[in-house]
Length: 476
Image (cartoon, rainbow, N blue to C red; front, top):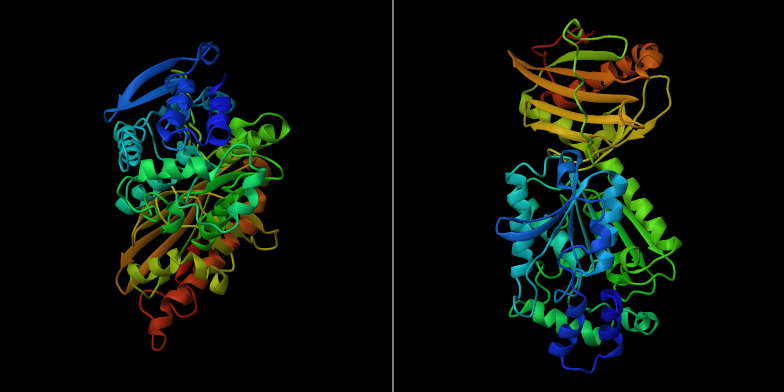
């Protein structure tokens, strides 16, 4: 009998057995390491990260990216074979490494043991530079989804490096199971039951109240999280809290991809099979391709090759500057107030996201005389009052990659703002003229609008550091 079948049997078929016996039966299907079938053709290693056991699939691919996975199992068991299969298939699809965190289980180890293990492992892998900015994602299902979310919230609160994205499958985000819609769904859910989940929640919580935000991340501050992909099935008693999670993430300004499958069961991308699960895994892969920054190998020049020029047919740089009669602090304030862009910015007419290294932004740009386009670049450098830099691309890597920079230079009487962008890729020769015709004038228009916005508090009188007619601006 598979681990998934045992889970269903215990959670629905044998709810009246003593809880300890239920847990023991479930653990018969536990697989801390991948089975022989999954090990075939994969490099598998068991290590520790900060003293926490972790199991790797293809660790040699870590430079390309890492998918960190926190398994579900009601905090009392797991992982099982199907969780390993999902992790193996998705990481192979993305050609990246994967690592499973084998956290301590309840009831032997109540809260905060599991959360501490996940956070400790993540910090150790980041410290060892195994997890690098923009190149790792954190995933979890059910209880593991809640742990992944709570661990990321801990990293946000500490100012620690964050994953580039979260992938959550039916996360158990409120241990109290207090949602009034749950009883109406429970008869249609053949996987989960409150009679089993409630003792599991009590075993994990120990002396900590179920409403504590570390146990029930639905009840905590969700601001500052990276983009999140969520899947849920309508025949899952947790679907109602997952819908609430989606809305609260959106209210907190977090980018969310949400896939709800009619008729699907709990954690269906892992525990299920068939077209619905296939669609979910394909959507997860597409989401991660968008949000993970790929490794770009450096070309190896031949011995006799001349040094590369700063700009060639495959690259182009645009730059425009303006002198502003305001301090760098004031210019930075205007530049990073993304929510206010629609009020004044003629180029980036809409901007969403949190300003921080490694974060994704959603930007709608309106070139002069061209069509508006929406891009999702990643912030690469955020140096307060000095530099804001992001990197994005059009389509696949190498078609047209772009790095956009705002540099703030203090000067007598104000600030010089330099807005520049370097484009690289095979499409650049075909769009170079359009960049000069449409994009560079948009830089100038934004610079001038930002100048007016930043100078508003000192609205009257002569400006210093820039002429009133705008002659303090320039392009190149």
